[in-house]
Length: 375
Image (cartoon, rainbow, N blue to C red; front, side):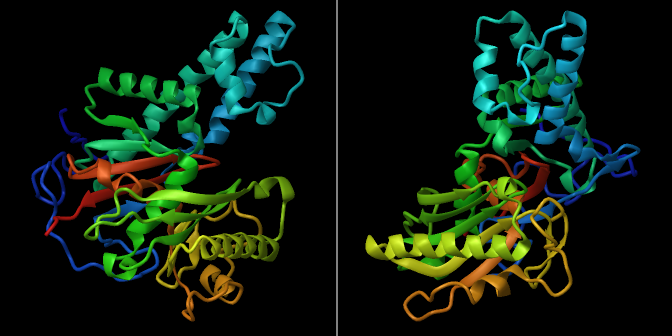
């Protein structure tokens, strides 16, 4: 596949800004150890994340979010209902139509309903292609060879169709970028990626870690089995997981933190009962830009309550609510949720040097990575 070289709107050149030939790993700077929002991780360098591209209509990423697809579908429902005096989905609000229902409609016997969903897919795919083009123009996205698409929409058939159609649209413009569905289920990918936040010596001698994935609609906590061999955690998988759709309950920030701590503590009890040796480490994926103290600087507007308030720190809030592991206070590392979800793909990206992730959820998460040279 021809790698991507796109001229930036702000004058960036078409060649890779690092000067390193595409397909070769970048020189490896020292690995940051247990740093919140760290740009240098054991397997990759995080070139950029949480880019907030804007145009005259607002955030560009909002055009390819889960909310955007629902808005497009809702618009076409209104048009069809006005013209045909009938809505194939009846009186069910668009936000309440499940992804599985939309997938069934695509292969169902109602041609109007299927056509309506296909039309929404086509329009959304066009928006996704626009968003991909805009990211590829960024200086720090230059030389990107592959983009992994994750988030809740990627697990649906209609989401995969939109992804495929977007790739066709990009190919028609001679933009040689591969869009690939995330390998693990998005619900688990945001947990599995947490194993890449810690160097192998932190994990050595243990069976599993705790991981948390916080989104604008859901929170998930899980125990991730390392299955580590000679420092390699590419076989890591979720052992047990708890899920809470917090958007339905509209909790305050403190209530959300309390519930999250209860989920983690419950899973720790299960690990103890099954004699799974947990490392005293937990990785957390959270929306927004994360500073070195683990605080959310911006981008956390979809979370319950004000998580960007000065003085609020999720790590400090959680530590006092969690039990110790073999007498040790748990070390917690917070990073952006798109970064963590992307990290679940490290083992599948060894054939490229520079790759990105877009997570289509409540909003659109994004990150770009360069593989670090292996010793």
